[in-house]
Length: 156
Image (tube, rainbow, N blue to C red; front, side):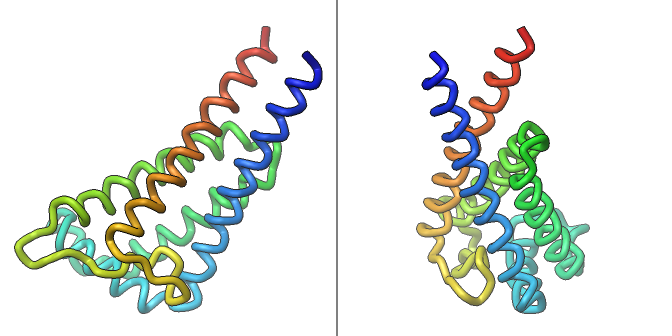
C-alpha cells in the first residue's frame, strides 16, 4: 500500500515537472522574440478572435508568456500542485481549442501556418501544434485527476 502511494506521488511529480519545464521553456523562448510571437498572436486574433481584440497583439502575447511562466513556476512548488494542475488544464484547454479551430476550421483566408508555440526555435505545422496540445492536455488532465484524488484521500 505504501509502495503504491509512493509510485503515485512520483508520477504526479514527474507529470508536474514535465508540464512545468514545457511551460517555462515555451514562455522563455517566446519572450526572446516577443515581437515575432506578437505577430503570430495577431494572425490568430485576426482569424479567430472577436473584433475588439484586434490591435492587442503585444498585450495578448505578453499575457500568454506571463501565464505560461506562472504555471510553469508553480509546477516546481509542491504546495501549489492543485493550483498548477487547474491552471495548466485551463491554459491547455484554450490551446487545444485554438489549434483545433486553426486545423479543422480554417477561415476563408486560410490558417496560421506556424503556431509560435516555442518561439522561433521550433516551428509546428497546424497538425503538429494540435497534436502537441492534445498530448500536453492529456498529461495535464491526468495530473489534475491525480492531484485532486490524492488531496481528497488525504483529507479523509
